[in-house]
Amino acid sequence: MKRMSIDEAVDLIRHADLKELGRLAYARKKELHPEGVTTFVVDRNINYTNICWVDCDFCAFYRHEKDADAYILSFDEIDAKIEELLAIGGTQILFQGGVHPKLEIEWYEDLVEHIHTKYPQITIHGFSAIEIDYIARRSKLPISEVLQRLHAKGLSSIPGAGAEILSDRVRDIIAPKKLDKDTWLEVHREAHKLGIKSTATMMYGTVESDREIVEHFDYVRRLQDETGGFRAFIMWSFQGANTQLAAKHPEIRKQSSNRYLRLLAVARLFLDNIPNIQSSWVTQGSYIGQMALLWGANDLGSTMMEENVVSAAGAKNRMNQEEMIRLIRDIGERPAKRNTAYEILEVF
Image (cartoon, helix red, strand yellow):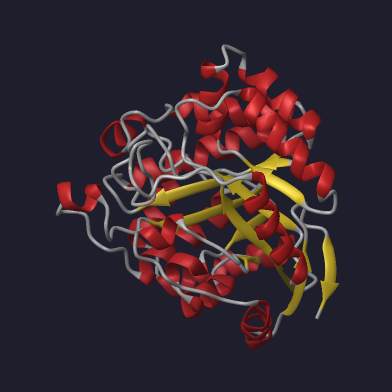
């Protein structure tokens, strides 16, 4: 099968009929997942600190060290959150913080080891590329050694957060202190070499062009060709409430549902080597989150027992396991609970 080119994908974004795009993406999804099962994971986001020096204009969550509401969670507080997750049958924690200016590798090793030893049944899906990169620089270590040491303590996989748009032009505008695109790709490349799987993400809807969106897809596809380490691709739209970026750039407009479904479908068609595409009901709401399953997504993502970052920027959508099961059944597919590795735990 001939691969979709960047030019072809840009043309689809700009000119294709939305329903036809959905039909093509759904057909591709059925080729990859013919069993008609749509998955989800029961997990919890734990933001171990909100202290961050990176000051991304699109983020409403971060605080500086001296702010009154700045925090670092104690191990006891983290344990309490994990106990609540276990009580509802959860299997994974998405573990991320701000990028704390002073924490070094030993602190992270102690934390991961504590969780993995006390709760071996919980998968630690944690630390975005920028956290890994900064731990490496702060601790004067290569990225590969940071990953190796955290993996040895119990880190299972890493999330794709911090990709935003893999264009240094865009990154220089929306997050000038953040790692560049090549470093984001390098962290994931090094993780994959060590057998640490990850996810790829994209946040669109700021100052990027259609071509930069597709170039982002292409960087992900090329790295997947090289390593095979990405389990899934997750895409969401910029949430502007309470952010400096929206205030500084009044030309940025809220992204439509049409735009989300259009980009999602093109992602499913372009990313021919990524097995799973996740619906972002957290930013789109449950109805469009469900529609995404007809536009190429095969996974409804997380029940997200706790979410702080996107909600700080104005997205307040919530969903529990029963609602996910109902939404999946409504489109004629079978709901299934999975783990981080996309292994089916229970079909409903």
